[in-house]
Image (cartoon, one colour):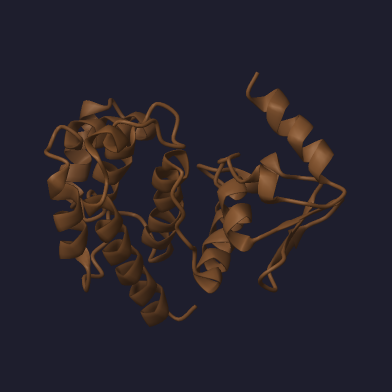
Length: 213
């Protein structure tokens, strides 16, 4: 995707997710998301931190004693103390801006909004369509970036093939499905495994089950 297309998609996804957040009930905000230990409100709060500047980021890292994962989690939980009505407003306020958090590319905000949008809606029994070209672009980013997902190592030995896009990576028994489901798999979410087909699925399911024991 061209850079302008990436940011246009980010804007569209932020705006549409803000509309969805406006529709959540008080109980839905407290539902556990697909992110372990995070409620829906924690994920929404995290997405509003995409414009964190270098100074604020450095302070948050110091508070987390240099642990990046702890910094991300603690920052989201602190932000989640704000009234839930503020998150949609803040997401809409980001539309049109290309500001990024320190040390990330244009693709990280795209990846964040696509995956975290699913982290929110799937446990609520709601649906949210992923744009296929954007999902394929994000999937390639996850496959090639290594940390923090280590997708290539975790999914070594399988060929991942999208049934709704020309995207395919890996070698081995085929695991096929919608590109959105494959993106979630790459990002460490197992909620979409039921959407996958192919000769590699039994082995993949066994591997994923063993990993969470």
